[in-house]
Length: 411
Length: 174
Image 1 (tube, chains in turn blue, cyan):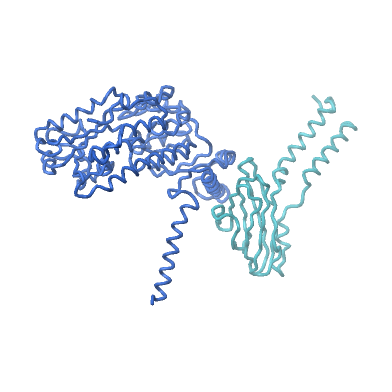
Image 2 (spheres, each protein chain N blue to C red):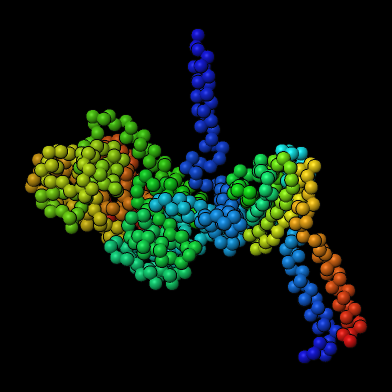
C-alpha cells in the first residue's frame, strides 16, 4: 500500500508536469518572442499597459521611474495593436519601439538581407560594402565608415536621421560612442548574428522588432531543419570514435607561429571551440583556460590531434576564390615540428573562413565541418548546396558559392 | 477698427470664438468620463464598489485618489494594468469602457474621491468630477462643501452664446 503522503506528492508532481507541458502551447512560444499576429497583438497590449502605468506613476504620482513621453505614448496608441514592440537585446538592454522602424543604420548588416529588410536600412558600415556582390542594395546605402578596428563617422550616422541603430555587442564602437551620443528616442540595438547558439533567438527578436516575422520564422525552420539533421547523424557516432581536434586560429599579430599557435579553449569569451563540438569532434584544448588561447607547439604535439580545424580572419563573398585560405593550410602541413602528428600525416587539416562560420549561413559551415570529420556519415550532404540554398531562398541572391568566394579549404 | 464699425457677421464670429475659448476646458471635462459608487453611504468597515465609465476609444491612464480612511480592496481590472501607490490607484486603459474597484470603508467619517484622466491617444486630459463617500451615521456635510459648485453644461453654454450673439446683432452695441 502506497502511503497517502506519497500519493499526494505524486499527484502534485504529475499536475505540475502536465501544467508545464500545457503552458508553452497556450501563450507565447517558450522563448517569449512573439511570432504570430495574435502573439504580437497580445504582447503589444501588455507592453502598452506597462508603459501607461509607468507614465501614470511618474506624471501623476511623482514616481521616479523611466517612462515614455506623452508623444511616444500617442504614437504607441496610434499604431496599436501592431505596436509597441519590445525586446531584450543580446547586451540585456530593453528596447521598446512605438512605431515601425524605417530608417535603420545597420552597422551590423548581417541579418538585414535574410530578413528582407534592406529597404529599412539607410546606412551601413564600410566593411559591409564588400557584401554588395550578394546584396546589391547595399550600394544604395550611406557608407558610415568603420568596420574592423576603425570607427564609423558619427556625423554621417546622424546625417542618416536614423530611427534605430543596429550594432554588435562587443565588436565595433561601445556605448560611449553610440548610446551616449545618439539622439533621444533612437534605440541602439546590440545583436551579433555570429554566434551559433544565438542565431535563432536574435533573428526571431529582430524579425519581431522590425516586422519581418515571416522571414525570421522561415529562417528558424530552415536553420533547425539542417541543425537537426546534423545532430541526428552525429548522435550515431560512438564516443570512442569521435575525432580529436585542435582548433588553429590564424593569428598574424600575437603569435610566433613557428613556436606557438593560437587555439580556442574553455576560457575564451567567444568559443571557436564550439565549431569542433558542433562538428561532432572533441576539442583537445577544452580544458585550456588561457583567454588568449596561445599554446606552445610542444603542447600541441603532445595532444597528438587526429585533425586540425583552422579558422582564418580572411576570405569573404568578395574573394575571387579560396586560395587565400590555403596559406594557413600550407603552413600547418609544412610545419616541421608537426610532421609526426596524425592530423598532418593523414592530411586532415581543414580551414574555414570566419565569414562562413560567423553568420546566418552557419548550418552550412557546420555541415562542412561534420563532413570533414565523418566523411562517410555525411557523404550525401553537400554543404555548398546548403549555403547556396540560404543565399537563394533568404537573400534572393544570384551569387554562386561554387564559382566565387572563399569559405573553406580544401573543399 | 472700432467694434461698431464691424459687420454683423464679423461681430458674430468674434463673440462665437470667445465663447468657444471659454468652452474648451468644459469640453475636456465633458468627455463622458464619470464614476458611480455603490453604496454611497456604507456601513462602517463595509465594501464600496466604484465604477468608472469611459468612452470606447479611450487609451490612457485613470488616476483615482482614495479618500483618507478608505482602503483599497481589489479590482476586476487586468492585473498588469493596475498599480496602487499609497492612496493613489493608477489604471492603464486600452479600450475598456469600465473600471471597477472596491474600497473598504473606515469606521466613521466621510471622504472625497477624486480622479484624473489622460487619453494619450487624443492628447486630452482632465479631471473626473469628485464624489463624496460617507459611513452610516457620519456627518458628510464637511466633505460635500469640498465639491465644486455645479456649472452650465456645454450645450447650454453654446445655446446661451448663440442667443446672446443674435441679440447683439439685432440690437446693435449701443
